[in-house]
Length: 352
Ligand code: SF4
Image (tube, rainbow, N blue to C red; front, side, top):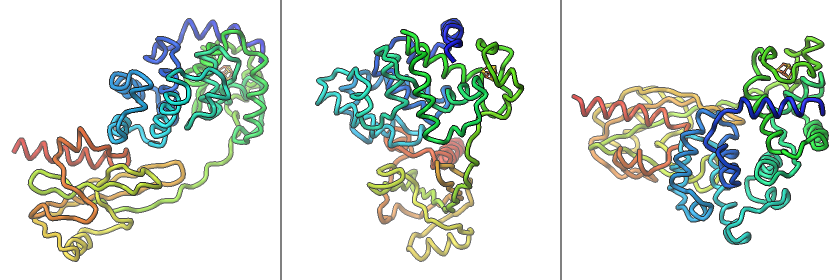
């Protein structure tokens, strides 16, 4: 592996993508971008990052931001515990580190929401500490370069890779980590044919030499995700929409959603359901459906668009204007397609 270092780092500085968080090595910028990039594509993150930094340019701003506003800034990025932990960590930095981002690996690792990968990224990029970032991209490159058939889902393998990389890291530890990650994201890619012809370390790659690139890396077979069925009610009345807050614990806690029940319902079952709850309606239509995939499960959702005769009080729900729904309330990604459906309907009504 040590042979790859110079070629890889030189390639990185010649070819790196210009991204808003790469304009400096400010730990706040690197930290927020790394957290946003977990489970999310770079192209999707750029807009969120720029909006976030415009509104919360300092760690103190993040620490004191009202939670509803913070969730709204994160709306659509998913995995909302990431932003809750960002704020907890920011509050810790303000209170315990007097607004200064900590500069040792163990201190950084002790912040809420920061695991080994993110702690290594911040330590190496911002403080030039020799801490290796080991994510799926790095593991893929490592296994291919070494023609290694170890299972990358095995935690012991990940730890060993991290240990192996540290001694070969150059003084520019951050540049090396970024280079390995960039290679995995753009050249040594998953789910397809890697671009070996453009690879700066091809001559050192054992999988390329042995023609085994497509077999690597080895992973556990994917588990089937449990499917949960939901019926979602898009209740409107007098240009207002009914929404409710999720519980204060568990999945997507404290976020806003459209009222729903966990079962599949036909149009006539929805009618009966509304009648039983004394919710008089003037129209019901089957709206859109959507399957949202979480880490361990899938929500299969069918929505119904319901016009209620009046803004009747509904248990746990509030009535809001569509303008406020867009600007103020954080709706999780799982419910975004239904918000978009409503937006389209309201536009059509305005044009009629
Ligand atoms: S030669 Fe191909 S398989 Fe080997 S590191 Fe480069 S892109 Fe990956």
